[in-house]
Image 1 (cartoon, helix red, strand yellow):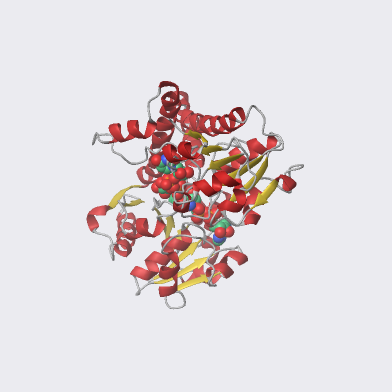
Image 2 (image 1 turned 90 degrees about the vertical axis):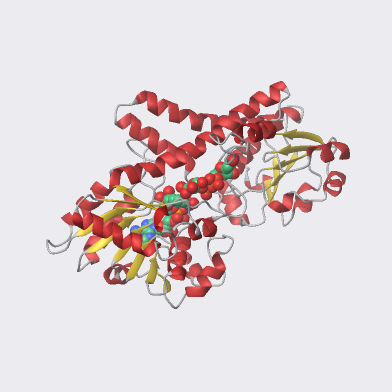
Length: 455
Ligand code: NAD
Ligand code: UGA
């Protein structure tokens, strides 16, 4: 069997690498229009940082795993084609800021139709609005000869960045949606067979297309909702003397609630939670369900408030002005163990502080300085560039700083020498722990003014 994947991003790259690694009998080709990205996938410096990814890629690359910009050949030779391109929130025209922009997905469908000379299975791996398979099929059929047929399957991806390889190796479930026809069922079985090489059959769920498409949006909405729920309670904890981590632990012991995704933070980031929630809200509005739309919109509203609340706390604590003050920021990725900064809370907090004329000294173990400058509008916003310094370690960042804000929960930030940090900072020295990872009592004993979320 030959598999092709259009899109060599955070999902396409790791997912295809895992399939190639687990299925030596399958040839997997990942095609992307971004030449630099493909060159990086073919180099020793992969474009995605993910623990365990390098080993898996190196085990198959050049044998049954290939990265290419030649999508025409990749499409022509494949039996199964995954579409794993971006589906960002639309930034223009009708429903801008809410609906998913499906132009990349549609372009893939047009390419597949143009370059297929036999019937194929097309798999939606990208996260898309419910009923996208219908549009895909319409584009595929309208642009290919009558002798060719396409089976469109929905196979959403549930991996989380930072744990992608573990998630792919041992997922909670694999979801496959398809048409309820003999051809649809056969296509689902073909795809299920690929996953069954290493995943037990009872974890491979088969549903109708619309259930599968919708389940992906709903899973992300429920996960994001838990974070917004605990973050809302963090504000109440700060007013009442309760400790949000203790509350989370106490409620999480209830097996009906469960302990995961109850870590209060400066807010959730990442490329998908907000995008997929907005998409869900748009769908609800589209289908005439404004109350349902409003319910899910509030999850985003709470997240925006939490990020803003954190920035305001810094400004208010520093005697209502950060103008000209150096603020050290530890962590810029949206979570630990990834180099991805999309929708990272650090971008929002950083921009709030720059608007207040603060200077930022930023350190992240994996995010490049170019990415940090880009995200903070160093070139596009007046005066931002000279106010941003990207540092090579935490100690350099805190030198002469009035405050330190921890925005990503990288393990190395737990073990810093906070006495040494205190000695390097201006006094009074403030720490704002947006991830509740530092030892609060120890910091207070050293002499810091400490703000931790929900304490
Ligand atoms: P990404 O931006 O990292 O990668 C998308 C890639 O698609 C880019 O490299 C782009 O150049 C390429 N591309 C665009 N048009 C193309 C075309 N016509 N042909 C070939 N390549 C093309 O995005 P991602 O994070 O991998 O996400 C992809 C999809 O997966 C999105 O729908 C996202 O919602 C979903 N998803 C992402 C995650 C995650 O953790 N990032 C997890 C689950 C699902
Ligand atoms: C999330 C989902 O967890 C994946 O299942 C899904 O496939 C993916 O989105 C997607 O569709 O893109 P991801 O965004 O990579 O994965 O990472 P998460 O671990 O979910 O974290 C998202 C954000 O929430 C991060 O900023 C993280 O720090 C924050 N978070 C997470 C909290 O603040 N508290 C928590 O308890 C958990």
